[in-house]
Image (cartoon, rainbow, N blue to C red; front, side, top):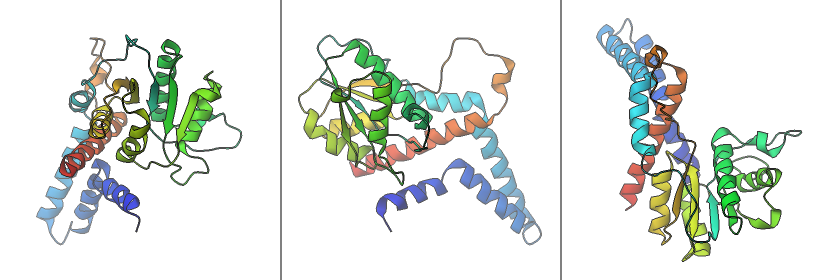
Length: 250
């Protein structure tokens, strides 16, 4: 089995929702055979579901990832490259490329275009493989960037990296000793920065669209568990596992 696919399968199996479903299945199977085991499996699943969907907890653990870097402001010297790390898309005939990008890819692109407007001297590097699609994510983001007004000749693509480490490996030789801006999701940026620094590049961080946005107002509904926070907690879980793997790799 392909190592990348194996990593994806294992990571999916240990996500919060997968663990909750497994515990519920155990609770049902052992309801009569081992009532005590069934009870604790149900209790643990319920507790994990509540904690994963509880906004104050989810926001606090996400903020620990996202608050490492401020939003990008104009660089005091010319920017050579703006790197957009790969995300997810689905090619659908009849849709513009901007609509084919999933939210994380679109958010990264919008941030990169904002930076490009400040630094039109820069070239944009898009990255990411196809992951079963007819088009690579790098190519799809390039198409969307062109629709948003970026000249085609200002965009370079890296069509084959499958994960963040491969992106750093493949892009680093091109941008060594250059003034580089690295654009990715705010929660993903600490891990991405560490990989690029490992390969000799010290980019300017540009966090895109953080999950946690606080304006000081907290309505009562904020304390009600909701499905969006389960997705947010899952993202934290995934990034934390990625950081652990990164640490083990040295």
